[in-house]
Amino acid sequence: MPRLAESRTALAAALTLAIPLFGCGPSRAQLAVGEPAPGFALQDLDGHEVSLAGLRGRIVVLEWANPNCPFSRGHAERKTMVSTAARHPEVVWLAINSTHPSHSDHLDPAAYKRFLAEHGIGYPVLLDPTGATGHAYGARTTPHMFVIDKDGKVAYQGAIDDDPRGHPSVNYVDAALTALETGHAPDPATTRPYGCSVKY
Amino acid sequence: MAARHALSATLAALALAPAAARGAVGPWLEQGQADVRLVSRWASSGPGADAGLGVEFQLAPGWHVYWKNPGDAGYPPRLTFSSGLDGATLRYPAPARFDLPGDLVAFGYAESVIYPVDGRLAAGAAGTRGTAHLAARIDYLVCAESCVPHAGDLTLDLPLGARVEDPEIAATVDRWRARLSVAVDEHAVVARLARGRDGGLDLALTLTEPGLTVGSPDLFFESDPRLALGRPRFEATPSGPSFAVSIRPLDESHSLPDPLPLAWTATGVRTPTGATALEGRLALDLPRSKGYRAVAAGAAALAAVLALAALVWRMQRRHAAHP
Image 1 (cartoon, rainbow over the protein chains, first blue to last red):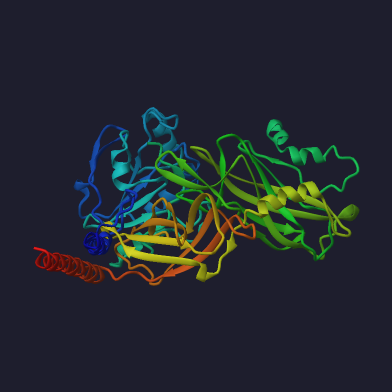
Image 2: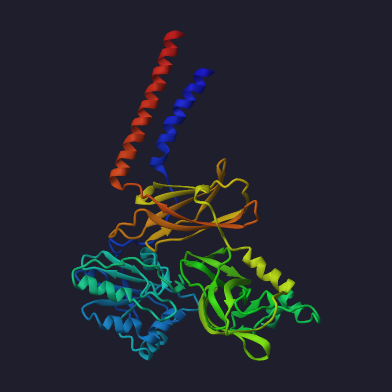
């Protein structure tokens, strides 16, 4: 029996040393800065298709939105997104709504267009009824912001600004766009998004 | 909301208590998903003395308010006193974990909570009729599947005089105060950070303080937003209660601070002195990135080969001795 015990000890030592190589743990499917932005081809409220591939070479902002979320509505009322987009006319600004059609927050296109008109929002709203694009980006809140650089990589992801209560001192997306436009990397490039959950 | 108030039986009963010293309670701020008010554990107190305050929330079924780290979304209450209190600090009892649609996790409180408030009655707090008038602005988010931001004004008139405790309100406030986490000695924690799969990190945190008993343990963090932390997995080990957490950097364009600061709170553990939540701060040395992984992998592989070689050699020797 000593032989067996010694053999087991030696084998156990070998396996113990090997285990850390295969350590595992759950990780949330959230897109990291520096990764390629997942492609999409989604329809806007008029049924026109917009694809990310067609925007290569441009800086693109994706804003996950839901007009029935108080945070999205608050930003619409305070013109946060509209005024930020206006400061960067070369940037393509797209809202994406991943609300499931069966959810009570879902808006039909006519009601959605009324909301946009009332709040002076002129940039396209893309519909992601399956949630596939939202899940590919790991969009968690409305709003959750992604800035994609000209090479198609995620350059910023997180909150629009530093105050969910509506009195921000820093607009992160504005700062990220200014950085990219002047040849710099956004800093911070990752912040914690705030808002309502995406109603997948 | 009346039904909800009735649930706060301890405090409601006080209104009917004729002669007992009554702790001060402010008027409810009724806001649909939540009713909020100030309460004091004291029936009377004096300027410069502890005000014994708390902010009480009574929440509609299914709604919650937030801990200091709200989790994936949301934000904690903000309390700003305009009069009556010096050194006001809102404290956060040990939270619960809520899994929300959209794969979000929130940390906070459902049904009811009293956030204890540290602070002393201001010297100039004397109002009319021998009371100190306390006034504060509360600004908070209440969420179920959807969230509603609220703000409003809270007031409380606390009788001035010798400090007299209201035993029932004091018990209620103190029950929540007892859920505040207690800082542990840094030597009573062993934390190890290792490289995990997909370039992530695996944290193992073990509480080694003697005499800990475990109920339903959980671990919460205040961390860098550039990190996605997985759900802690608890394990009872001979060294003490232990948690394993996966950490994934969300930003490949910037290096993480090294050492990596991480504040943690463990709940569902009880110390011999009666604390039910522990907290601490870590400054974790990051394992070297690719170079470290290569060296670690090489060392482990070499060790495995040597161990197997030793095993074979021993077996051959035995075989030679006993053919």
